[in-house]
Structures are given as C-alpha cells and as structure tokens.
Amino acid sequence: MGLIGIKAAKNDFNAAIAKIVRKYRDMSLSEIKKIVLEGNYLYECDYVDEQGVKAILSIN
Image (cartoon, rainbow, N blue to C red):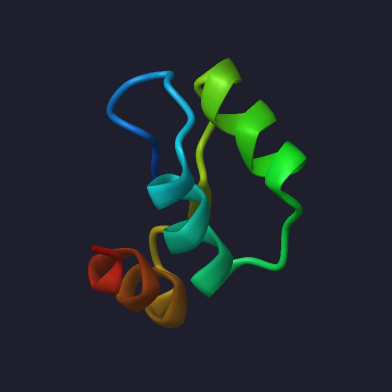
C-alpha cells in the first residue's frame, strides 16, 4: 500500500513545529528535531487508514 505523510516545509526546526507534532505523536524534542533536519515525514500513515488521514488533515 502507499503512504501519505506530512513534512516540514523547510528543514528548519523550531518550537512551533515541535508543539504541533507533540499533539499527535509522543516524541522527544530531539527526535522531532532529527526528523525535521533529515527531511523525513513528521507523521505518516497508509493512504487507506481513515484515522491516519483524518489526523493529517486536522494538523494545522
């Protein structure tokens, strides 16, 4: 199956990104920073996972 996800627009970590991600994932600041700086997905799910898609659409 395919995946969908959300990444930071720039590979630039800041507190606002961490605050939003921590609403949806139980991660340390250092883990979030590493993901952002490496350009990886902050949140991802299978494209047929209804709850995952709803979570991605609700992130603002």
